[in-house]
Length: 197
Ligand SMILES: [Mn+2]
Image: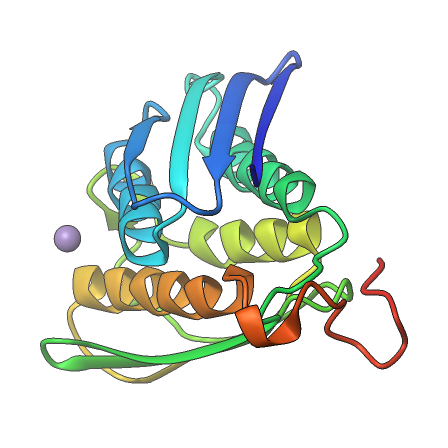
């Protein structure tokens, strides 16, 4: 079973994250930030990775620690569930259309964390969420899983569509990258023989 559970408690957050890479996109998400819940739920539903993420965070300070730690904990759970990454697709890419917005996501679960982020918001907030935190969320999950991650907004106006389009593109690219490819017969998808950090 490609599943994992991460639980950690700091002065900033108390968090439990669980994933099943071979799930159906079932989720149970409660971070305390409604819009962030909405985005993590999109990630689960469109990647088909089952995700539980429950956080009690220091939202009286701001949303930074809770947002960051949701990405770190889900990312660590995905990394643990991937194990040695034998048989995975490794690469994924998606164009993600949402009404007037179009985003492009390309990624490689390479063990070499990197984020290229070419997107911008014109609103400071979506719901109650600070939009500047989304780049940081992707940076954090790229670091925790070991993903070379390129995200580009090609065009779009509505900030909700832009953000949701990016998450759905990330989800569909991750689905391709984590899925087991039967033709690979369990081999590590690298001529180096490992996909380490
Ligand atoms: Mn929405």
